[in-house]
Picture 1 (cartoon, one colour):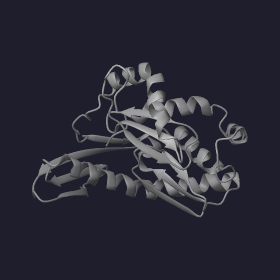
Picture 2 (picture 1 turned 180 degrees about the horizontal axis):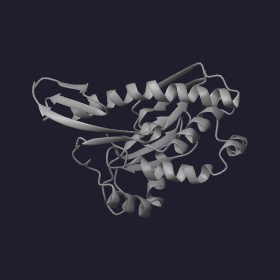
Picture 3 (picture 1 turned 120 degrees about the vertical axis):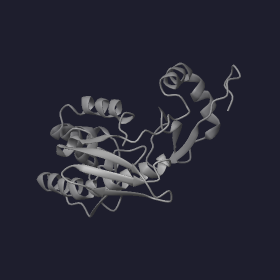
Picture 4 (picture 1 turned 135 degrees about the horizontal axis):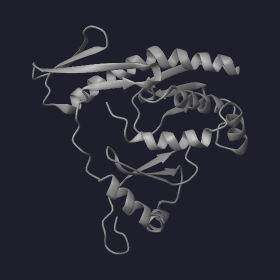
Amino acid sequence: MLLSDGTELVFRLREHARAKRVRIVVSHRAGMVVTIPRGFDRSRIPAILEQKRAWIDEALRRYPMKPAPYQPPERIVLQAIGEEWTVQYEAGDPKRVTLTRRGDHLLHVAGALDRPEVVRHVLGRWLVIKARRHLAPWLHRVAGEMGFSVNRVTARVQRTLWGSCSSRNAISLNARLLLIPPDLVRYVFIHELMHLRHRNHSREFWQDVAVHVPDHREKRIELKRRWNALEI
């Protein structure tokens, strides 16, 4: 779309059933994403973006629209569970990428290293396996402490959310939670568990969260600060 001064603004539009307001996010990886509530009048979007013009300009300076080339990591720090892994790379089969564990906290990635997105996918799949092994039991323990019962816990690499709670009492966790400190992970758990009681972000929801995490505002700020820096 074109802004009032003729500048072309490129963004991805998402409609989300749980969104309560228009939300604008800019990141290296996804560019600019505008999330709107279901049924929102899309003709209002240009005016909203005009109002946010100064903020958008600053965000785009910090996070250029074109994502930076992916650089496979030489080490992966799983702060949530106190593990650090070294990653070694070896060129090989041009048609695939494989990941194997060698020794204590050592990962060996071999194959088509000239296909960075495939390497990213393989590392992401490893992170999901670790998340299912560690985050799911951890969440169930926290749920038990708080008197909640969760029907199902899943984990995957997500691009926009730390976690989500469905109407069927199933919680989906972002595997990238393994990359942040335990206190922030616990806050995300409590946040999603409270959605079993409150299906919104009402005043009552935040009051119940505050009982268990008095500094939840600070933790939310820290989570936002860390989001764009978390890559594997």
